[in-house]
Every structure is written in C-alpha cells, then in structure tokens.
Image (cartoon, rainbow, N blue to C red; front, side):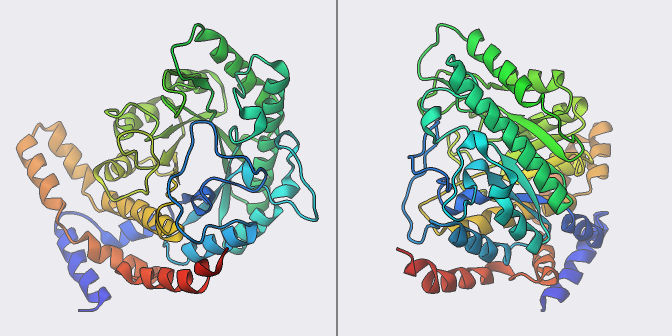
Length: 418
C-alpha cells in the first residue's frame, strides 16, 4: 500500500471514532513550534569564549559541532528541511553575529547584531523568538538581576532592555510576534540567610527592564521559573512562586513553564489548565528531564503527549506559545533537532486525533469504565499512517528516511570540520 492508501484506511478508522483526520492535519499545519538555536553548538554562542556557567552544562563531544554563525545557520537549514509544519526560530542573545571586527557587550547589543538571523528567518518564512542571556559571561560569575552590586545589576538590566528592543525589531521585520523569555540562574548552593532580598532586587530589575516603551502586541515578554540548577541546589530567586506572582501582577507579561524546571514529580501537563484559567496566554519550553532538569532530546513520551493534549483539548492553540529547549552533545546535533521537533509535531497530531468532546462527555457523565476503555483503545489507532501522509504532503522525508540525509550531511560536511 502507498502512503496515501494507508492514510485513507486510517481516515476511515478515525472517522468511526468521530475524528476528522483531514481537519486535524489542516490545524496541525498552522501550529508554530519554535526551534531553539542552541542545540547546534552546545549553548556556546558567538559573543564570548567563556565556559558555560549559571547552572548549565552539556555533556559529550560528538564530532562536527558548529563553531561559526555560517556553520550553525547551515546546520539549522539542514534540519528544517526534514521537519514538517510551521516553525519559528528561538535565538539567545549570546548568538549575536558581529561583522567586520565589531563587538558589543551584552548591555550594548543592537538590532543590527541580529540582522543575519532576520535574513535567515525571512528566507524560510519563519518568525523569531528571543532570550536574554544571563549566563556564561564574566559579569554573571555570581549574580545577575539579583546582584547586590548595583553596577552589575544595572549592566544586566540594560541587557534586558536591549533585548526588548531587539525583540520588537524581530517582530517588525518578520511580521510575526516575538516571544521574549527572561530566565536567570541566580541562586545559592546552600541554605541562604536572606531569601527575600534577592527576590526583591529581581522584582525591581524586571520592573526596570519592562519600563521602557515597546509594543506589547508585537513583543510578548515571559518570565521563566526554575527550582534547581547545578551549584544552585538550595535556592533560586526565580522560583515558580516568584514568577507566577510576578506575571499575575505585571500587566503585559506571560508565564513560561519549562517542564524540566520543577520537582521531579511535578507535571507541567497538570498545570496548563490552571494557568489558562488566569492568563490569556502562556508559554512552554518543552524538554525531557531525566531525573531532573537535564534537557534531553524530546521523545514521544507520555508527558510530551499529555502536554499537547492539554493544549488541544482546552482549545488553547492560539493561547500557548510552544518552543523546544534541550541540548545533547553526545549525538549528531542535527539528528537531535529533527527527532525532537518531529516528536513535538507527532504529539500535537496525537492530541488532534482524539475525540476530545466525546471523552469529556464520558467524564462529565461519570462513565469512567467506557472512558478508560476508549482512551486505551485509541492508543493503538493508526496515527503513524496519518503522520506519514502529513510528512509526504509537507514535502519532508517519511518515516526514518530523513536519517539517510543526516548521514550524508555528516559525511560530506560535519566530518570535515576541525
């Protein structure tokens, strides 16, 4: 049977369950997923030669890492060819591209330092998201937006303000809103003597960053929490309670949840419905925390599927900004992008292929026996045949055929890098 014939068979099976597969694919085609640039070079960036710091590290040294802007953009271009659907590019401020010997410190970054990213995004018909980089910098050795050293704190406030301006530049150039996410690594390895002081300084720093004039219809500023980091085991200033309260009381800000940034037994999928009741929009960084925040490549696992189910079943596709956030230096970095991004799309498709209204009705009528039965039977419906057809009509390789292209690129391009 051809891919199309298998799809037609699957379409009939889903129709009997009350699911329109054509409609599901049409919706899937328009859901933007933001692809993070930092998988391609192990979160190094182009503005510093410092080692990674701020509770972040990568493990592994797979050959062929991108070391220049040209290499990173070429690798992203290669990955994009194998990923269906609508995509954006998520850029960190440390990926400024300087030309003709120019360099600017992070508090002096300007839109022109990201012109190449705009050109790349436009060439692919993609939008851009952005992240200030509050780590891997001499002035981030101890603290950033919580620093008791006012000179250091003001440096990072200026950096945040510069990033807001760059985000608006992205939005105006691409014609698509830019999601700008603020995350800081500030915290303590051991039990602090003062928990309030750093958080008070963090709040004031955020207020100062957001005091500048910008278009809130073009730039969506998010604040991301984290419970733990390497060397920050006892306390982080930007805890979940801090960030949730901040965005609840600061007009124009959005909560961002990274599913690796909570205690190991906490599930972001369970938090989404609560957040949607109190926020018009929310944002997600999707990763795979193995035991804790370790940023493994996203798999088609239960939590990834459950996260996407919550977005779809709550009719929140236009209210949730979805992005990937992981980095693995132990495997081919392009393959890591493709696997993770395709799994995000598969999880969304899985959610769209559920008879969600029928399942809700069974729950409301307390028909729990039938609810369990239907949820379990749906797990073995032929989603793979629908996915293969989606890839075919999207012009990307079907099934594992994409890996042959990755192997070719590794042999002809990656293996020749120093």
